[in-house]
Image: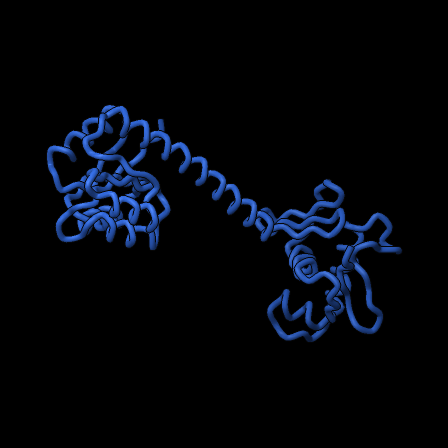
Length: 238
C-alpha cells in the first residue's frame, strides 16, 4: 500500500484519536488539527492525500475549511456530520466535499470510505500525470511525414531510423521543423542559429546540403527540405 498522508480535522480529541488509531493500523500516516485554521497550516506544510473534516469546529468550521482548501487542492474530502447537521452536510457536498460519514460511525464504515476514495484519487492522478507527460512529449517532438525531431533527446529519425546530426545541423533542422512551410533566408538561419550577425552565409548552404543528404531518400528531388530559389529554405508541410 502506498504511504498515504491523511489529515484529520476534528475538535473532539477522543474522536480524532480514535480515527488516528483506525487509520494508522491500516498503514496510513495521520496528521491532526483541531480546527480549520490548523488544518490549512498542515496542508501547506505537508503533502496530504485526503482530509477527514468535522463540520462543527471553533475558529474555522469544516465548510469554510473545505471552501478554502478547494481553491488549491483536489484530494478527497470526507466530512463528518451529526444527523442534526443535514443542511450543512448538503452544503459541504456542494462546495467540494466528496463524501460524508454520519456520527456515530463504525471504524469499518470510515475505512471503507477512505479506501474507496483513495483508489479513485490515485487512478485520477495517474491519468492526469500520463496526460501531462504525453503533452510534454508532444511539445518536445516535431513530426513531418516520416521525419521526426525530438528536442529533449536531440535525436532525428527518418522512417523510424535514427539519423546522426551535428549540433549545428540539429539546430537548423529544429528551427525549420518548428515552422513548417515557412521560408527562412540564409541570413535569418545564420543569425538565429549562430546568434550573431550574418557576414557570410556560405556555411548555411553547406549545412543545409548536409542535412538534405541525411534526411532525403533522393537529395536531388527532396521531399522535406526544399530550396525556394532566390529566397531561402523551408521544411515542406506534408
